[in-house]
Image 1 (cartoon, rainbow, N blue to C red):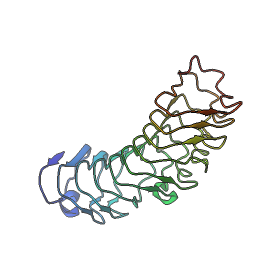
Image 2: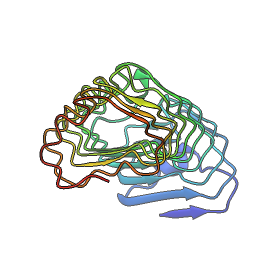
Image 3: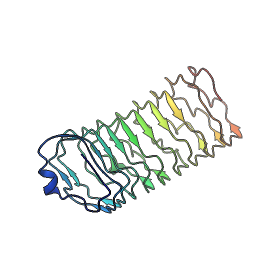
Image 4: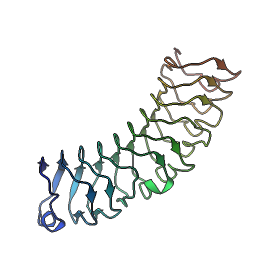
Length: 239
């Protein structure tokens, strides 16, 4: 079911009368500003797409009892924060191209099944400690094209199943022995196009399974501390 270029979000009563299941429901290219409580309720959907609207707020219970929801996309809106209470079966969440500035712990509650999280192309400057503590089964995390400058609070320490991490095009200046703690399963890593000037001691010591080429180009490196690359014994080449 796809609805585009209209101005009014169908009421929950209208949606509730959709008795059959849908693989995907899409609402896009509209002028929605607020997604109210029970906007989507008692539906059987696998993939819900709410992209390229003008959403500024989403009620925490806007998506309520939506059975079998596995993929949710809120990409390309005007969201500054996230308050949704979602079903624990969700596997992919796309919040890319919004206006989020701070990642808070409360944003990702009860998402134990989440595997892919996209937060690219926001205005993220700060990642609160334990922001990802409730999505410990995450495999892919996209934080590229933000304003992140500090990784000293070990933001990824609980993401021990993380395989792919994209931090490209941020403002990271320094890496240390705390920056990537927990990234022991990482196999794909991108930190290009940052302001990185210093690679500290033991920066990559958690990269125990990293066996791909490591690219550190388009950076501003002027200091590499001793033992900076400890943990990269499986890396075939480095640029």
